[in-house]
Image (cartoon, rainbow, N blue to C red):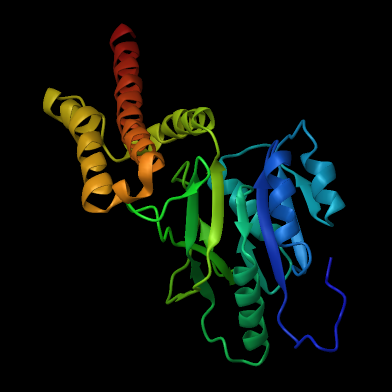
Amino acid sequence: MTPLPDAATPPRETISIAIVAKDEETNLRRVLPTVASWADEIVLIDSGSTDGTIALAQSFGARVLHVPWPGYGVQVNNALRAATSQWVFSLDADELFTPELATEVQALLARAARGEAPLDAYWVPRCNYFLGRAMRHGGFYPDRKLRLFRRGSAWAREDTEPHATPKYDGPAGSLTSDLLHDAYPTLALYLEHMNRYSSASVPLVLGRGKQSRSLVAFMWNVVLNPVATFLYNYGLRGGFLDGREGLLLHGYHSCYVSWKFAKAWEQDRAGRARSSAG
């Protein structure tokens, strides 16, 4: 889906937008228009959508590949491998390009075509929205993510569910324009996601030896650590400046911290009980 050539447009290197999705029709209706007019390729890896995700993506010229869900990091890498352009931007299905970011990326690609972009990877500031409000404080901004890089130079770790993002070994630059992350328009959706993410985090927690077997470890991980997280982010890092939405976000984020450790303890306890019974 290479854009039509324009005599007024300077030559630039090519870019693929790599997305993983399942039942993301609602989000993609907002996301795809922000990239379709200038990206050379959109690659979408679908893991079994039953809504209109596939038809919508194809209507914007995306190349859709069907891959059963193998885990987030693996699926991100599947999308990166499927990309064919010189550069890749790894985009979540609930992230939107601002016009400023699209312009900045295209300017970088033009500099790369002239040999004036010596770096192969770039961090992008991400602005997180919660209940319709931009979260500008409390550690949620700038939520920098490594998203833009030359094809083949960065890959997601496959053992860091559910927060696998591309990693690059080497010096990386930084863009200045925001990527918008509008994942949580309602409390119900946020709580559903945090419940799912805390469950997905259990193997990582256990892998780090955080079983919370002793009473002291249990109290710290499940009770005190979440409270400390709230006080640090909401108080010391200024989360209170984001209004009532900020209070709710930091309150429920601290619950997520508790949930992932409690679920890890629960799973470890069940495993030890099975071993004893055997």
